[in-house]
Length: 118
Image (cartoon, rainbow, N blue to C red; front, side, top):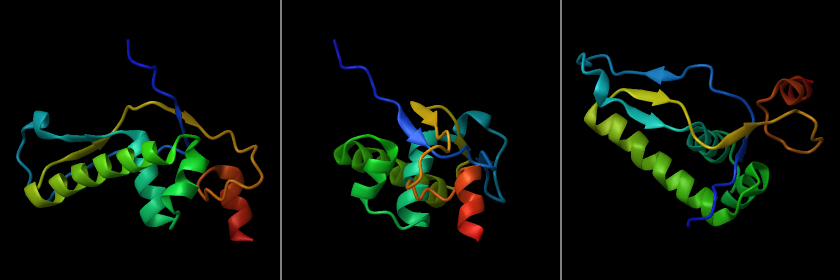
């Protein structure tokens, strides 16, 4: 029996959860599903500049797990861009940040967004 998957800490849900190319057909089944934890890995590593080690500490999983999540997300995003497919962000094994941590540096939850603006 496989080991149960550990929930990954996610700062906040994405504001936009669906993207589609300008010239997109009407085939709704053709969408690429990016999980919320994959979105968070892309956000932290590519957008916020975290290392994989920092990302793993923040998401409370092993660095190798973050590396796998990140690689899966990049493969899905490349498919969206190259093949012109629709992207949906949904699902995954995650728990939302409660904003109680003083040093998470996430920059996305309401508490830390307010602190970063000052």
